[in-house]
Image (cartoon, rainbow, N blue to C red; front, side):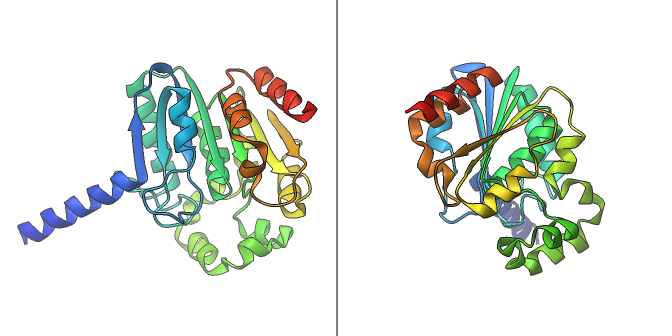
Length: 248
């Protein structure tokens, strides 16, 4: 029995290592937190290369349950607040004084919600999902989420106490005040445009639409621009990078 328990513990620790990565950077005053969207490739974190090139401390996350981080990532977490608490503890240990949170698609949803809860300085959400509540699903008539209705029903039934976190707009509206959130999307892709435009009136939110027409906005904007925008220290620097990119 003792051997079986030890083996299971080692297995859980190995799985957690695949889903959570922390590294102190050359500039430890700055931290980037990057949420991977749907896991399609083993051992792959989205924004891995970008975060490495910035030289900051970094925290990279993957969602092993593929349920919008609401079931935790291991490391003693079993819900979304647990993931946020884990990030906050690591941030304190790293000594970072400036935090940027980034994510794409499902990871973009996580970046919006976690960024608001953490009081991040800057949030970059690329083509994010924005609403997971029953009202959000029905109101948006979102076919992407409708295809995952069984997963959503499971979420609604088992995470009722966390329903305040299901919709990113609710979290952003009750944010800590100083967070600046940038929502990046292809202006020619109606589904993402509708999701993102629903956030436009929220405090601290800026929409950045690009001349492309599908969900893969990060593929269209270019790696050099991504580094400049995500690597910006202030909201004004992000807006300047966007203006320069649109002028090209």
